Figure (cartoon, rainbow, N blue to C red):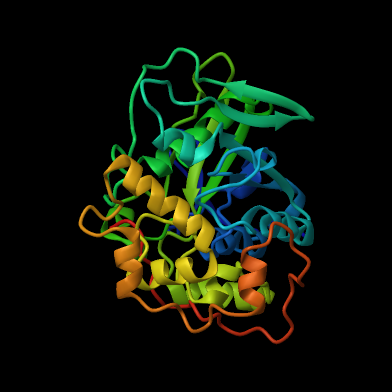
Length: 345
């Protein structure tokens, strides 16, 4: 497939766009990296690239493991199936799949007491690359990320995703002397804060003026899209969405997202009682609850598990492997479509 033939206008810094639509000149990049949560919006961004004519072999799906090294054992915050589901999607789409993480993940960071934030890890040609975690300041968390828009207190996004992505882009030599486009799936409809995000901008890992000539732009490919548009493109490709949507969740972030509603906490307790108990124990140990008013147990008591959170989709969501079809011939909206999103405002 060839890229869509388009008329472009060029800005002062040499970046090309499709007329007034804000779409970059996709053919001008050496590589495209999609930071891929496995949620509907990042999936829609990837499919949008394909529909614009970007060959699948030019796209890297890159996932941040928020619980740290998946080989290290029992995770805490994320859906157990997320990594395997993402790998299955990448295989089906014919795209490279890469991962990176903060050593120890969110759990190590929230338990930090007079220690440094852990290093970032990724693999390059089978070799482990580790960066950071040596000279940073000593500090103490001993609390969950807080329910706020500010990343200074809602540090889960910055510590386990945003900063991890920046470290990867700055430390993998493949980005040197290259033009790279980073694609993410934030949408303006999600929150007032996200509505203020720039659709296209220079990425914070950019170093185009330095000796390594690391040119990196950032495009929020579906920023102006409605949720209906997101579901429509997934339906056109008949792709199976993350099992969390089938269970009734309206947003795929961590399973134990700090923004979870009372019904989500009730569902989590019903389908993952052991992990729920670990979360509750940390609240007691820290003497600081996630909600600041209610414990997770009290929130779950006020909620009702999602009716769809039973049977095969619970099994698939809580598995660490994926053996279900990725293409769904009789595609239908999942139970969580247009439901509770429960994310940052």
